[in-house]
Amino acid sequence: MKVIKFGGSSVASAEQLKKVLAIVTADNSRRFVVVSAPGKRNNKDKKVTDLLIQFYHAVLYKQPAEDVIREIVSRYTEIATEFQVEDRIEKPFYAELKALQENFDETDPYALDRFLASGENLNAQLIAVCFKKSGVNARYINPKELGILVSNEPQNARILEKSYKKMYHWRDSEELLIIPGFFGYTEDGHVCTFSRGGSDITGSIVAAGMQVDLYENFTDVDGIYAASPKYIHEPELIKYATYREIRELTYAGFTVFHDEALMPSYKAKIPVIIKNTNNPDCQGTLIQKSFDNKARNEVVGVASDNGFCGITVGKYLLNREVGIVRRILQILEDLHIGFEHMPSGIDDISILLRERQLTRDTEATLMKRIEEEIQPDHLSIEHGLSVVALVGEGMRERPGTTSDSTAALARKNVNLRMISQGADERSIIFTIRSEQERLAVRSLYYTFFD
Image 1 (cartoon, rainbow, N blue to C red):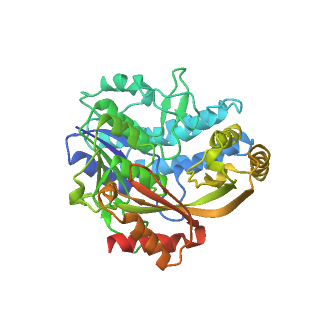
Image 2 (cartoon, helix red, strand yellow):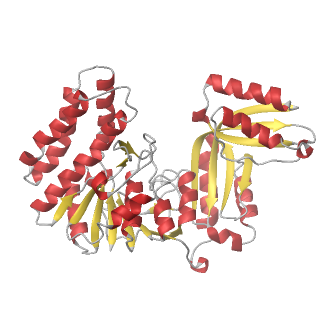
């Protein structure tokens, strides 16, 4: 038994939906279909989710919204017309969107969630109708009826454990269930969305709840590549990866798979496979708890991300000052700032932060408090940093990975600002200047994959 999830590009048009229909019906074990809102049909197009954000802002600021409502509805009717079901969705879809406008309450913390969730919700209804028209015994099921209960955290919901038992009651459904991704319901009955890209999370949750054998995630690429194609021409496809390896890679910049989506599958020990809707015969990327490392490259991928800054706190005999790290962390906590890495030396500590957390005022307050409360001999902040991650569980069994990687970066004159490696030796994180990101990725990739 399988859960199969289709991303926005896979359901962006009638042509794509016909591919989805063929993939689903090709395997009778595919019993639960999770769908995103329609994505872009071409590079100049807009995602339906982006149109819904535009719709929300129009309503919030009391601007005309009729044109954007009709544009959103047209995305669904264009697909429905091809399946000859437009008369069954045009009026009710328009009415559902219009109700969002008429019942809008700007003081409601869940208002935006309702707008965002409607993209997936309407699409699941449309796809169920199209499947039925094509002779498939399918039905739309709302996440509330399915049993997806989430925490009271607008736009950042987390699944409640009691949901899994509720979902399991639907496991033996004779109908093919079409499930909208991206949102669930609080115990008080509010629509509440996961973080952006959360349809992947829904797919993983449903897979865990139904205790299936495999979670298939279909997107618009053949799988997960060992490096970004924007830096490497035709990088290798990662055929096999562990949950933890993919978690590390998505943290460091890979975007094919939502970084929170693996946890429900990981806990339930359900394998995940990433495949291409436009090339379903391709092997894809299989993700599971473990593999025989002897059959795989010790490094599975090189990922990178920008938008970081680094704070350096220098103080003589810092290593002998009890509680200094706790005091620095307390300052960060007081300002609601998370940190990514904190490598240290005898007389200094470096703190890597995501720049989006800092406004000009927040940065000034942060530096002032460190200066006053820590009294460092030296304090500085550097903006414009990137992280490059070398990831692979096989690295722990191969001596010299760190020396080979630093030598490769040195040959290209890539200046390292920080190096961080966990005790499990699953990844090595290099912090560099952002202008050298491409050079660093290429250097590491061709060292371990060419």
